[in-house]
Length: 468
Ligand code: BYC
Image (cartoon, rainbow, N blue to C red; front, top):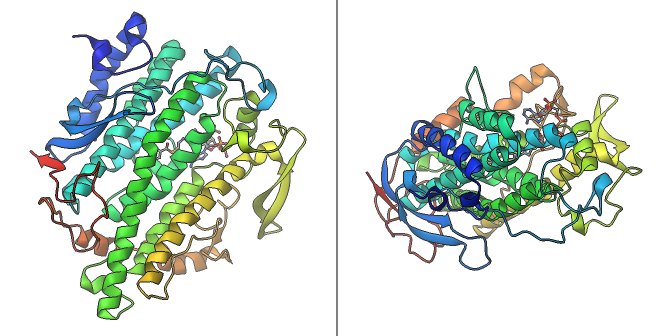
């Protein structure tokens, strides 16, 4: 078996026997993990897109494949030989092909945190196949899952190739921790939450995958060139995941709106849809736990990452400043005398807030889109992003409770009212009751509208998945 061919790659694996052996010994563990923690619904084959090349043309190949035989490859965007560090104290120096000793542990930490989220999401989505609303949706779920698996490979490649023995140990640990596990949970909060139903899945791929887009966007700026190049390529795949989320929520809102109009009611629940109020609660939950993924409003970690050149800003090269920020100030959201307000801090320590704000304005785009669907249906109701202080467990607002409008609440009042803002047991039960599988070609569940387009030009009633 030519292993270098078996793992499609553009990193010269065939020429690096040591690395090849290291990945060879990790691969069976990955497959064991995939078998025990990956998609639970048995499928014969799935119409998947596989990355085969990083070029502009034809990097993706479509075809029916058994998921276990998916060719999880290692792809880095092409090297730019003249690339220089774009920010921080090494600005203008050539980028690094290897890990500098003084930044080794920080870089490893960033790669491990990023890597940990990828298998976590596959674990969270493990049981969704059983309740897929259509074969089209089932295929999208599986596509997201195999690509998260590939993203794990991407981070494991970096750990194996650049971090020696401790990198290999970290790679093992990425398969040892599990989402929601009491003994060894995943590192970040949102990745230990459940994704028990498809509304959660769509919200997750809209809001949480979008954190991925922004974090990968900052790591793409990294002075450590292999990390930069791998993140650049991952971002291409990430775009599909967010399309799944955006259009998934579109279709839920569309169906709900349709029934509200047809039945002339505010509550489409009794007619087999997700009530708009419940969509809002799911949105509130997934948005607020995703805000936590950006870390504290102020952080010395992020200041150090930036100064060292490890993690940049979103669209670093479009920023019109000195890209060092040593003397600048920045206003961050904070508690001021017990009220929600803003405080000026050194710009470097405010970088998590800077990134979160970019993310928030992007999230608003989705909400506008869903509100357009409501408006076009002739409905007055609107969806809304809750206040940045709402339901936060990390950062400046972790110690307080706030309403979606940003009103500070006593713990008692929060307890009394949170069921109106976050999915309550009865909401979850209703959503679960709608999750009846539709695995028949060309059919779709009643709580969601069909997609406007199929995959790769194929019609909706294409056989996207052959179940076992
Ligand atoms: N949960 O200085 P602070 C994706 C920890 S998603 C638990 O305020 P920092 C994907 C933090 O680690 C993108 N712990 O934050 C999406 C630190 O611990 P230590 C994933 C948290 O370090 C869908 C302490 O609290 N990639 O790709 O500036 C499907 C103080 O933190 C949390 C990345 O995140 C939390 N939410 O920023 C599949 C990029 N937040 O060090 C995939 C890599 C903070 O004191 N990670 N903590 O022990 C990073 O850049 C940073 O680690 C973070 C935190 C942005 C996460």
